Every structure is written in structure tokens, then in C-alpha cells.
Image 1 (tube, protein in one colour):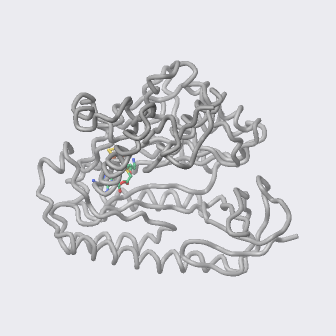
Image 2: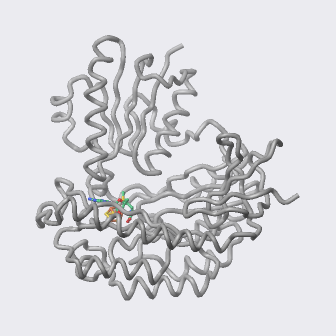
Length: 415
Ligand code: SAM
Ligand code: SF4
């Protein structure tokens, strides 16, 4: 039986696409192998959002040269955001690559209809469902629109059909994916939006929870916030990246909103959904970011008190507007310092927010077992661990929280 190996780094979209590739191979009767050297086909699903990720891809490609020459029948395929429009150049540089296909595109060995309709094969408790590909925003630092192309929404009926099928197979929670889920539907006939899609998904039998990622502060609508308040399966968790707390930096980033607008949006969301958890993404050390502007980001995080913040040091990406127009003038050591200041501030805030759950009962959808402990998430996306000898996989349980850290909660099952 032929064997395959899929290597994946990067965002949830890559993970979702790798799950589909996995299902396609399994449909053909191929067997997965954890060891690349044993595989007949290796697929690398790559990320280049920061230089560090790109370096990992290049290292991986170099390390596979020896594997490829030792194993002549091995096929090496590369997808994800490393693959740009110049396939000829990439193949010249890395002649041991057999197939290149862009992120989100059909693998060259597949029938496009089969590829579109394939679902992740293993019945998982939680599943990712891409709803819109690409991005039209061109934030100045970001390479994604160059690699994933313009926005294309999947028809609503196709998504409803997929989620219905997933729920029949035992999936209890779906996370709808898009670089900007607030753009969903603008390119479809009748122009449905995310609120319409959530309304269609909410009644699906067997489905308990619906999440979505990522929202854009310039586009998130009151209609969506109303839908979240109205639809009982939609989780109380929002990822709303601010990227910076300074108007000057936001303008250079071409984000399309001001800090005051961002603060207002958070206030409106919290007024309508008092129990919501909000997470944020921040870039530290963007070109020209002064100490004063950095302090404005510190204030944003300490005033708004997010449940989680993903912080990255700015990494210039060739081909982006920022890499072309601005010198990468914040020294590496200073970027690192700013990143650490934000991380320790956030650790304190998340620690305090989570400590507020001490002694409380929370509802957890159990996703699996790790080191002898069951784990799952609350509707507000908090990771919870508990001990039990019984099988709780895919069950909704109530856990009483006994111990908290900034990153997770430990508790005891309520009988
Ligand atoms: N579409 C989402 C958004 O608007 O935030 C996320 C897309 S991006 C792939 C994920 C995160 O990577 C961003 O939120 C940003 O913080 C970070 N990122 C993107 N480009 C970056 C760069 N050049 N340097 C550092 N971080 C970057
Ligand atoms: Fe990149 Fe901005 Fe699009 Fe997000 S919204 S993918 S950060 S260009």
C-alpha cells in the first residue's frame, strides 16, 4: 500500500487544507506515515507570514534532498503560502520538487470536484470549515493577499451541506475560517453575510457550537453582533486583531480604522455580549514605531484587558508595501524587548481574568485526552483539564474550576 506524509506549519487555514489532503489520500487507500523517509509522497504545507516560518520551509526542503536521492520514486509536493506565481523559479532553485500548487488550490493529481467535496475523514469533535479564501485588504506588512489571492466566498448551500454532514459524523463544533470572515458573501449572488450564514447553520441537528476566525475591526458589523446575541450555538469568543494601539502606526499598516474606532467597537461588543471573550493580535516594532507609539499599544492592552493576545515581532516580507516603503528601523533587540513587555503585561491580565473563574462551574466540550487528563474548551475558548477514568470524549460536561493559570484551567467534574 502506498504511503504519504503531510508536514504542516502556519495558520488554521493550512491545518484545514491539510486535513482535506489527508482525507483524499485515505480515500485512495493510501496509508499515512509519521516518518517522511518512509513515504512515497511527501506534501509540505508551508507558511511565510514571518521570516522564521519561511526559514523552516527552506530548511525542510534542504533536508529532504538526501531523502529524495535515496528514494528515487518519492514524489515531493509543496503547497501553502511559500508557493508564489513563479513556479519556474522555485523549481529551478529546488529541482527535487515534483509538484507545486498554491495555497487553497486543488492538488494537480486530483479531480477538482472530488477535491471540493472531500471532508476530513476522521470524525473529529471539532472541525475547521473554510468559508472564504484569500484577502482583499493589503495591510502593508502582510504577504497573505499575494499568496492566497483575492477573496472568494464558498456558496452558503455548500457550507451548510458540509457542516450538516460533519455533524452527522459526530462533529459537535465547527470553526468557520477566513482571513476576514466579515467579508464573507460580498462576491456571491444575493450578497449573504456572516450573520446570514450563522443563521442557516444554527439549526443543524447534532451541531452544538459554532465559532469563526478572524474578524476585521473595520468591517465587523452590528448585524453580526446581533446574530451572536440571538443564536444560541454561536460561541462567545471573538478574535479581533488591533495590530497596534497607535493611530500613526495603524495608518502606516493600512488597517483602515483608528484606535478610537477600535475602542468603540470593543465597548459595543461588550455591552451587547457581556460574557464574551476577546482575543487580539499585535505586531511589535513595526517600522518607525516610536517608544511613545509602543506605549499606546501598552495602554490599549491594559485598558481593554483581552483574554488572549498573539504578539509577533515585525518581520519584513519581500513584496509587501511595508518592505518596499519603510526601513526596518526598530533594532532586533528592541523589538524583542517590546514583545516581552507586551507578553508579560498580557500574562498578568490573562492570569487575573482566569483567576476570576476559580470555584465557578463552566461548560466544556471534551476534545481529547492528554497525559492522562481530559481536555476541552469553554464557549469562551478557555482550555480546561480534568481527571476522570470514564470516557468523556465528545461530551458536554460541567467542570468546577479549582486551579487557574494565564493559559489554562484545571477542575473537577460536577456529577
Ligand atoms: N487576517 C488576520 C488579520 O487580519 O489579522 C490574520 C492574518 S495573519 C496571517 C496572522 C497574524 O500574523 C496577523 O494578525 C499579524 O499579527 C501577524 N503578521 C502578519 N504579517 C506579519 C509580519 N510581516 N510580521 C509580523 N507579524 C505578522
Ligand atoms: Fe493580512 Fe490584513 Fe488580510 Fe489579515 S486582513 S490576511 S493581516 S492583509
